[in-house]
Image (cartoon, rainbow, N blue to C red):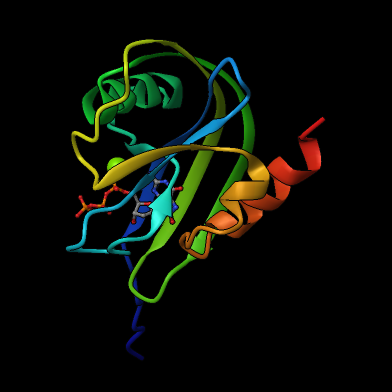
Length: 138
Ligand SMILES: Nc1nc2c([nH]c(=O)n2[C@H]2C[C@H](O)[C@@H](COP(=O)(O)OP(=O)(O)OP(=O)(O)O)O2)c(=O)[nH]1
Ligand SMILES: [Mg+2]
């Protein structure tokens, strides 16, 4: 008997919930080409084989936004199945330390409250993150 095993890529992503001194959270709009084009997200990217999730987040944020952050505790881990791939998002609470965020690898950047965030279109997997942020907000 022949067994057919279907595999789809499984992306492991370090994700930053970056807060500033006013308690606002930084979100960015993905580029207008490619996967999930034009949707808003929390900045982050793929975890490389030789790094921890915390190292990945600090590196990605420096590369994508040109700022320094302190990577804090894990807030949640979400695995979600999209039509063409699976993704696991390792979401960490982060603090903005220095630098003015630049849209180096995205369309634009906004600092928003959790209430304001609900007006922005996000990928499906993010609904759980936003619900969690709503729960833990003071
Ligand atoms: N950074 C980030 N990615 C998210 C969020 N929600 C969500 O579903 N994702 C997905 C979108 C992407 O498939 C993946 C992030 O990977 P990425 O932006 O580094 O890379 P990509 O898939 O766009 O690019 P590629 O190199 O695979 O072509 O995780 C989020 O809030 N932040
Ligand atoms: Mg990215």
